[in-house]
Length: 189
Ligand code: HEM
Ligand code: HEM
Image (cartoon, rainbow, N blue to C red; front, side, top):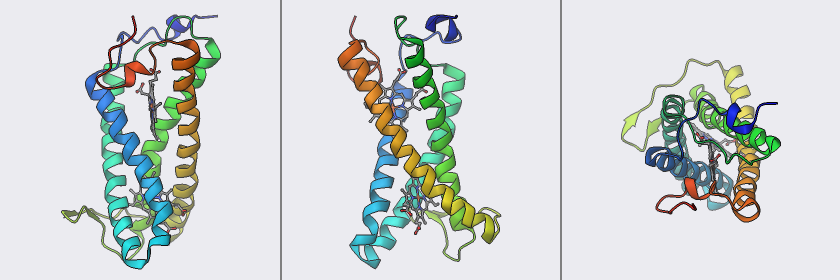
């Protein structure tokens, strides 16, 4: 069976670039903020709810654009190997989580965009410019609504697994997997 290093042979970098780190944390904060905002919005009254969802849609569209750019960055720049002694199951789980995240980072905002496209409200980006609606039927918008909710919660579940994995590397394996994704942190030798 191929070793972890052999399976990640197309990866030549020893760490994440500043761009990859900046994109990781910007997108993570925007996604978690968007989930939190959507969940508390209802309890804050109609006016506040409408404002939060305007911001929610603008943040979501930003996540979509950044995620597409980030996917291009990952494909063109690669990603670092896991330490050579990482067990195979751990490496497979980590990579599967990352692939699922890339899917969700694009599918969740796209579903949100599709679901509001059949509605009457205008769509804008932070009140700065109008965003065109997608050509979807009411039926498809309904499906997108369901998908938006289910996939957003799947993102949250995956984030819990992902953070547990990062902490396992840091506290149990005591390797530099967490540190290499942290900005301004010197990596362990
Ligand atoms: C980072 C991307 C996004 C995340 C993580 C996210 C997450 C969520 C979550 C967790 C909810 C609450 C689901 C529920 O309880 O019904 C929600 C609702 C909503 N989202 Fe998003 N969303 C994102 C992007 C977008 C985008 C791009 C749009 C539209 C352009 C959008 C439009 C909406 C709307 C209109 C609702 C309210 C749905 C309802 O009233 O049932 N979202 N979103
Ligand atoms: C919803 C929030 C988050 C999303 C969507 C997300 C997504 C991702 C993705 C897609 C990667 C793979 C990067 C690549 O190779 O291209 C990654 C790596 C990583 N993330 Fe997150 N992340 C989130 C939150 C967090 C949090 C809160 C932590 C803190 C513990 C964290 C720690 C890491 C670490 C340490 C790596 C590097 C793993 C490695 O080197 O193999 N992430 N994340």
